[in-house]
Amino acid sequence: MRVVSVNVNGLRSATNKGFFDWLEQSNADVVCLQEIRIQHHQLNLEHQPQGWYVHFFPAQKAGYAGTAIYSRQQPNAIDKGLGFALCDDEGRYIAARFGQLTIASLYLPSGSSSPEAQAKKDDFLSQFLPIMQQWREQNKSIIICGDWNIAHQEIDLKNWRGNLKNSGFLPHERAWLDTLFNEVGYVDAYRKLHPSEEDNAYTWWSNRGRARQNNVGWRIDYQIISPDLADTLSQASVYKDTPLSDHAPLIIDYQFDV
Image 1 (cartoon, rainbow, N blue to C red):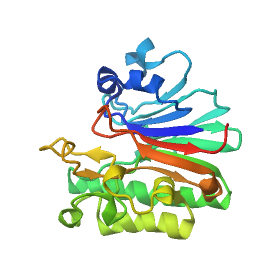
Image 2 (image 1 turned 135 degrees about the vertical axis):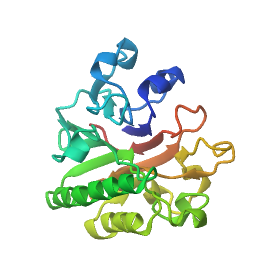
Image 3 (image 1 turned 90 degrees about the vertical axis):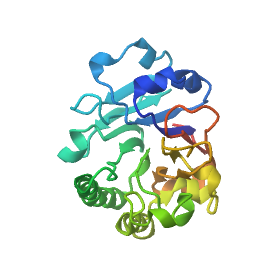
């Protein structure tokens, strides 16, 4: 099974950049989108191509945030939201259930624009961690695809020394991921397969300067999985041939079907 995660930075913008052409040749089974920035009344047939089951969770605020899931197989159920307003009002979590497996699309807030934005991001993290802990206690089998807006380790961004005090690489954000992996027990799927890879792992580049051309990037898009799925990991890659947004699709193959 091939699962893809991509922040499209506006679904209409990504459409104009060839997203749906890429989708049809991606060989993906499930594609999780973040930052769709589109409302239900703005959707058209181009956004809902034949052969895909499509589920959207827009933010209440137009032109902002939102998540979606495209799947070749019809899910048994769709879950929207995590039960707290900071997530649910902004459409930041949608999940598709396929039998015992859940595949989710998550868009974690960015804290880079202001101290208030960082406080909002920290609030989200504090409310989300107990939920993820509860899922582990329930032995929930889950793949959480998303833009987590955190680079975990020094190898996860090019200029790590210059970003030690910047949102996305703050010590307490990285420690939050440490807790998620080392204490709660989740697995960073890409790092499981590529424990030391650097340049090829980046999934986001700033629009400033020539960051993408010079590959001055960050790895902030992850597929974080429950430990029962770790042995099913087959291969992982980042698609960079065609810029579909300021993020690149993270593609991971699993050795099972749904």
